[in-house]
Length: 294
Image (cartoon, rainbow, N blue to C red; front, side, top):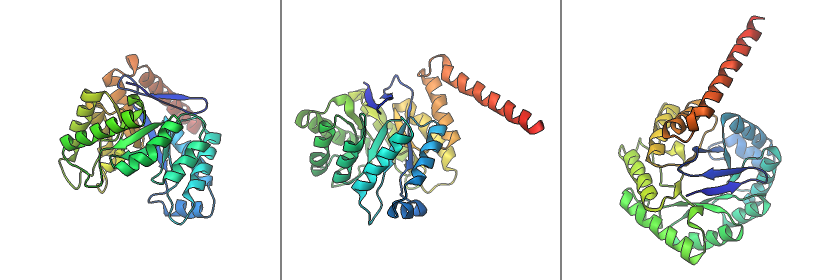
């Protein structure tokens, strides 16, 4: 099952037979005090630097979130999307909890977006799924509701079933346009959350063949050596069926881990991309050494 998203000039396909999709997480003010202050002042210049760093790191899609308190989020999101699209041609994941901001972002976007996100809550689906349909987008869905964030894979699957049923039958969303976030949780709070996540991913793949994503950093939150943990978590999740992640594309360790997983899973045919990047890195290192010794 393929989920297709695109910019004005570039298409990215999520699928179990495709290379793992790296969704760059950096354009997000959460936990970034200086960036928040800049956005409140109307200064979006940091976005261009964030775009450049993520593109250089290997991002294939860029998540754009402008959730800054005491601002007009809808206006900021529209401006940010236009700026990103003027800077690079990667597709965008439009990320907001504010329905009005999502619509402004979808109006501003040139292409086929990925909307982040809905839950299994009836009011949330009723507010956002009509926009997904109207603007011919794909959508990320999380299996939690008003009552809880369930820890058991079976309960998460029940909520996925509800989301799939409502989205496809009540709103006419194509099954392949539903991307499930199986809820990666902090391993430091519960040592069983990794297993629960992997089992949920596997069950989603086996039952529906849906594409999946997650906030990759959630698993290592609060732990030291987060890049090391992420570089372990992601290949294991990929083997379970994860097809994308919202992650720090500036982390060479995590990016190389998912690209290595592509080779092992057979999604980088004959390892050609891996070999090409390895040779390019060797050539760059040799050139740097020669320049330093000249």
